[in-house]
Image 1 (cartoon, rainbow, N blue to C red):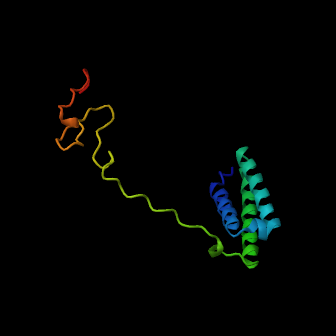
Image 2: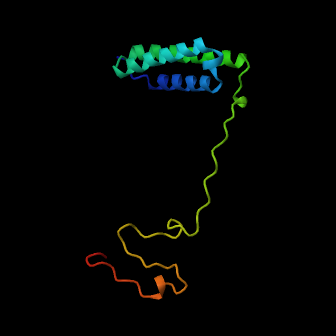
Image 3: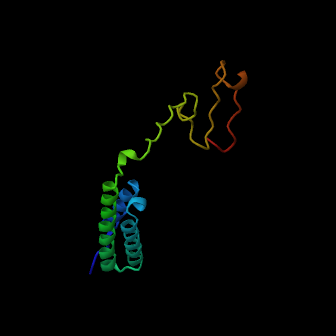
Amino acid sequence: MVTRPVQEMNDATAAIRAAREVQAQTLAPELFRQSQEWFLRARRAYKFKEFAEALDYAGKARVFAEQSEFEAVRAGASRESINVSPPPPPPPPNPSSPESQGAPEQGTWAPLLDSPEGEAGGDAPPPPPPGKK
């Protein structure tokens, strides 16, 4: 009995992604197309629990993807030539946001403390609804 070829499927996926990063679909289209076809066969075999076939097909997909990546780099592609900017940094926390002020749990009551008097509008806050504590 053959186990699920999870690692091999992931390896093939990573190889295809790496080939795509160097524009292998343009610079080595036949090899890249073959890697795609073998990977689709591997996915279909995996779906139908034909794990021995999926293992074989995923291996072929990885090899063709690696070959297409190599040919693309040999043809002049490089990862540095791809304009991929890093994601922007997360925004700084807003000091007036409820998350930074320790907002109460949903469903609980808390007085508003935004006004200079320390209470909403200077009036005493309304009592909590009956039955809620």
